[in-house]
Length: 395
Image (cartoon, rainbow, N blue to C red; front, side):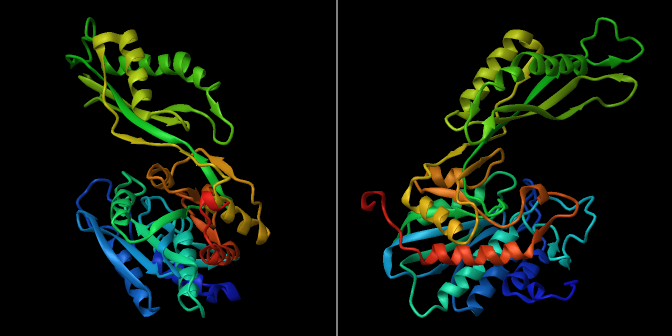
């Protein structure tokens, strides 16, 4: 680790975070690679050295979640702290991606805030709980999962594993960079492609040949002029309006050839209450009505539910109370990005997103995290772990 002098550099959470970011765990985006497993094994070994039980849970392609557990006084209830092992790619980074560098009170590396910083805070807090004189009121589970940045398969495996456990999970905190704010609502997503095809031909003789690039250009104009404006009035009080963005375009084989195919990928951010499949069906019907057989609206290659939890839930309200006690704004908020929380909430577990770091630093060429905020996150997570869990019937 490259460092400057200062107490924060020597803090336990900073040391652990430095170890985590030094182990590459870039999401393989569908390739059959065990990308996150070396990091999962390191966490399991770290837990074992702290006297904490931790197990690897295979997901796919040699990729494994790691789940650490500290038993509570009430073995029938549990609280879950979850974050993800994978990161986005490292191309074009301006700081060394896997050499943690500390300067001006910040740690720089890929994954520093998204989401190894929150994970390091949760694990450090779990270590404190495990070494406390008395066990926590409920069993505490810290899970680090694969594939959050691509297809969410890690959290789905986690939910399957938890479903067979002895403890009922009463609430969950999902670690993402939220500036230590409590996110109780966020958008979902529907991503699909619209494809235009044609016979192709020589670019010197384009007459009478349908050019798929021109067709896709008309589709994009139609979306911008007819569909996107309608979304501005389709809004949610915490997450804002829905959105539709052409995010990727591909087509053509050479500069002197009329292409035989062109495709545009769409990113449609959905609101709480919207069904991503229904959103796709409505888009499909409108585009087909406008362009007919000249285009194909392919089924979604990714969908995810939005998150919309009731902040009055006893567990969620308790997390907000601990934020307030630590001097942070306890008011719940919403965001435009998504997380594993929506899958956990859909399984019937009250969930919010909270962690150190800012989303504005995530995925950037100089990703970093404020180490003071990292230390504060440890204190907040530890307080939540020791907080008695009330059920709605007890309130």
